[in-house]
Amino acid sequence: MNIRNFRLFAFAAAIVLAIPLGMPALARAAAAAQIGPSGLPLPRFVSLKPGRVNLRVGPGRDYAVTWLFLKSGLPVEIVQEYDNWRRIRDSEGTEGWVYQSLLSGKRTAMTAPWQRDKDGVMLNVYRSADDKASVVAKVQPGVLGSLKTCNGNFCRVVFSGASGWMRQSDIWGAYPDEKFDD
Picture 1 (cartoon, rainbow, N blue to C red):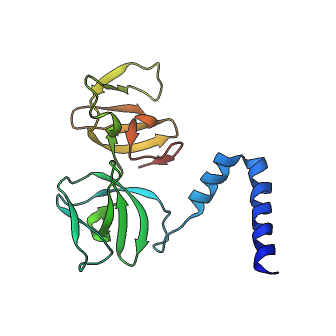
Picture 2: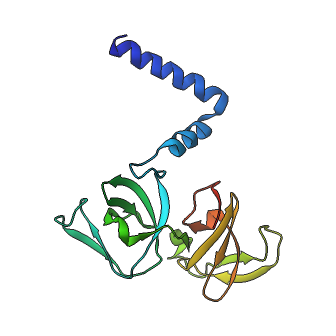
Picture 3: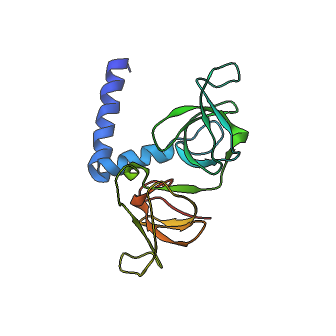
């Protein structure tokens, strides 16, 4: 089979798969199937372990530092792996490389960082995983908390002064439709 025939075959196979699954399902299946050299899925959310983390241009100590994180527990997304280095992305889209030992598998979240500059915005924290449940707290965008579980629509979040359930779409630190228990 020459390269042209192979490309046509691959394209036809993608179309055949996309019809019954639907394109969003096909994209999720492809994303979920990507496994990094560590054996863990890519991308995935983790958090920063220490209070000082250098973000580098490349995967090694010889690369320049472009950013310094000063907040332990900050949620970040691992998007690439190379040896013991991880390329991460923060909630603002800043990307760079950090050494793996500076990352924790502990799941944390930031409340709606995309709404940080909007005056008066408050986000509801519910007693249970339901929009009709009573509101136990209101939090501002950009607040950090620990994630305990997500059911695909809501996540149980623990803040320093309150805990409860938030809409998964109101946090950065869990993927849409992602489900997990701590």
